[in-house]
View 1 (cartoon, rainbow, N blue to C red):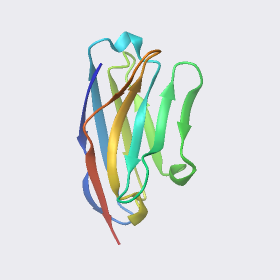
View 2 (cartoon, helix red, strand yellow):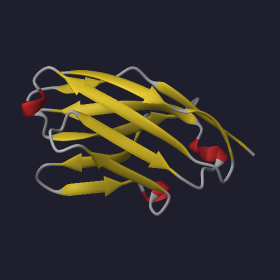
View 3 (tube, rainbow, N blue to C red):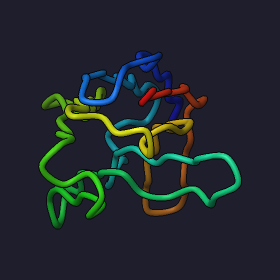
View 4 (cartoon, rainbow, N blue to C red):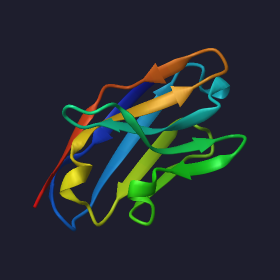
Length: 114
């Protein structure tokens, strides 16, 4: 599975940005698809994910502000980020998990100014 992320950029606090990720290859094998982020000096953390088995999961810090969605083919996943906060500043990574492997896209930088 190959993942190509796009979107991100610079926003002011309270603003919005969106991210997109296109998956190619053996997308039929994807069980979970979603987004992680890594802020400077911090560990990578889950932002939101969609699982075939258990549905949608959000980090508590983004609930009510971010919305994850996917297309019916599991080839694309989107992240709509509203009411952005400076603490949302991070490199965001698309992630896809199969039974055997964990795949990462290239990161895309989101910067939120106060």
